Structures are given as structure tokens and as C-alpha cells.
Length: 87
Image 1 (cartoon, rainbow, N blue to C red):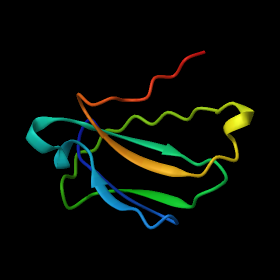
Image 2 (spheres, rainbow, N blue to C red):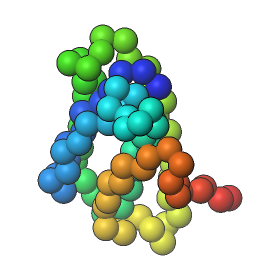
Image 3 (tube, one colour):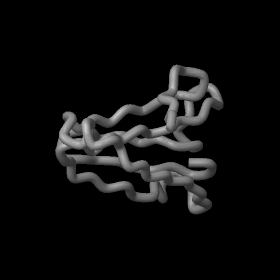
């Protein structure tokens, strides 16, 4: 989130708030969700944190060898090791 915040919950039991309004020490977050063999999830605007919202969302098609991997959700903070997509 560039502005505002998001509330995430999913069938793995993950519940988290993230985004600009929830950033620790001014750092921004990135949520990395790999659906793999399947996960149900929802992303809702966190209207309690701000009425002004701005979000970028990218969807990537993983290689076939990873399509049945276990699903996982990671919340990555700015300045940490973030995954890099390589062609």
C-alpha cells in the first residue's frame, strides 16, 4: 500500500494488517502471497486507518514446477530480503 492500509485473512489462518498506515518506523510493507496448491484469501481496505487508499497489486504466473507448492503468505518490510523475479 502506498496510502492507507489493508486487512488480510486467509484459509491458512493468517490475519494481518499491513500498508502505509501500519508501517513500523516509516518503512513500507509488501505482502508476498504464493497460492501454490490453493488458498482462499481476502484483502479488504482498512478504513479504520485511513479513507485515502492507494495500492499496487501484481499477479505472476509461477513456473509449472511450483504450481502445487504449499501456499504461503509473507509480510516483507522495506529493507529486508525481498524475492526477485527472474525470467
